[in-house]
Length: 231
Image (cartoon, rainbow, N blue to C red; front, side):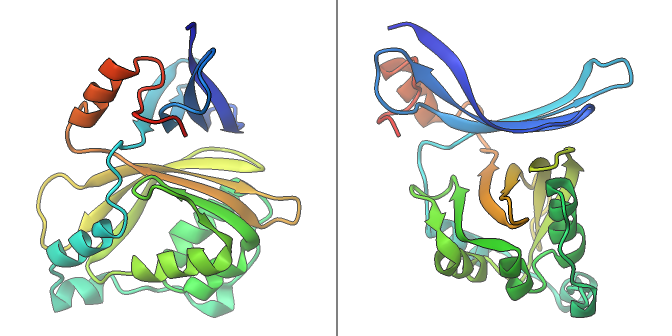
């Protein structure tokens, strides 16, 4: 079978910063292979100066992720006070572009008000978190997911944002109170619909072991798709 390394899916268009979702595909083999997200940034000379690319984990812990974060986060009263949400509902607004939307949700709201987040989500939103085997579909499932991961001692910190009118991508890391050293790093991509609501999200976190052991096994068994079973 002839391998096509990447199939590009959704793209955040920008002159200096961009991001996109992708999957691997092999001609003659049904289904999608390994999926992931890429963020890149150009310097003033138009050369790529920064890349972060993360593929989905083959082992998806699902709800165990929530349990693990709750078990290891150990916030002090000082930490909780210093990191308390500061969003004022009086400042709520409806950004017109994807770049403005992700900045609003993560620089301003940043988990302080789940209802405000859901307000700018489409009723039929699709939310892919690659720690879970299946995406969340619709506001009800997404609300349950967001509430489950509103965990004291967990701080989501956005880093670099892409440009983009309908699609935007950004890098981030998670700080865990009471845990020193390396934190969780990741990528997210948001897409907006014609009504100006967020209709699609993909979150993917970086594994702590590179390359992941299961990925090495899957690559040996299915070198094109790099998954045990096509999506």
